[in-house]
Image (cartoon, rainbow, N blue to C red):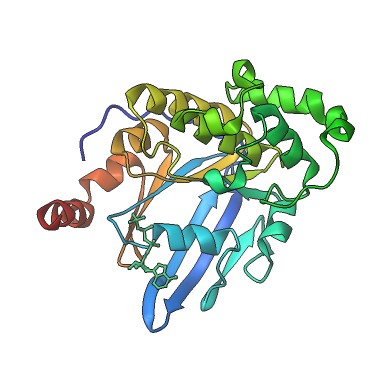
Length: 265
Ligand SMILES: Nc1ncnc2c1ncn2[C@@H]1O[C@H](COP(=O)(O)OP(=O)(O)OP(=O)(O)O)[C@@H](O)[C@H]1O
């Protein structure tokens, strides 16, 4: 794991406040244990990266934290309230949103219309919309602010279908911001991007992290080094290590896990 110098994010919450917590999380898929007794604390205001070799269970953990999967056992709490028994939309209402891949974007609507539709939705989840867009114009100023925040103001009138890959990721993050979440989960925000797109997303994540807690799954170690205050490393569904970038990169078990991945594949 070689990467540039870590840049620390400013902690915004009172010290010690836990935004999102997992205790003893287990997820079995027909006899296969994808998540194995995972416990983790995400502190309020931090950017927390979840990393690990392919198949380590990162996506499964994200789905458990955001209510898209029910744990076989264990608990998830958001600001002290148990959420693992709630459906995703109820979790969104309590302040946790996750970025969706392109499935949450309506390709035939403009960028701005996509944000307006998401603002109108109580959950930002993909849904059928029946309110005429003309009636939603009152949401326009808020949509414009979000587009400015994610750097898409100049692209507001373009069809979502015509956006480049990086711009679509920006729009997805914009859509998840419509719920003004206290905790934002980002699933591989830089996947498939060139270096220019990666730099833009790093700046964007730093910006949206102001006053929020951000948890991201990320494969790009340079991105992790630049963004993450703390890191949790998963392997075989378990927490292998957690700490700052410098702590985990020196951990012999983490080096072994990554070297093993390179050797096999
Ligand atoms: N619905 C499912 N049914 C059966 N097995 C599953 C299911 N979802 C995930 N798995 C298995 O659980 C393990 C963890 O998968 P997961 O997608 O969470 O890993 P990951 O760390 O996100 O991987 P990657 O980095 O490749 O995206 C894998 O072995 C995967 O095949």
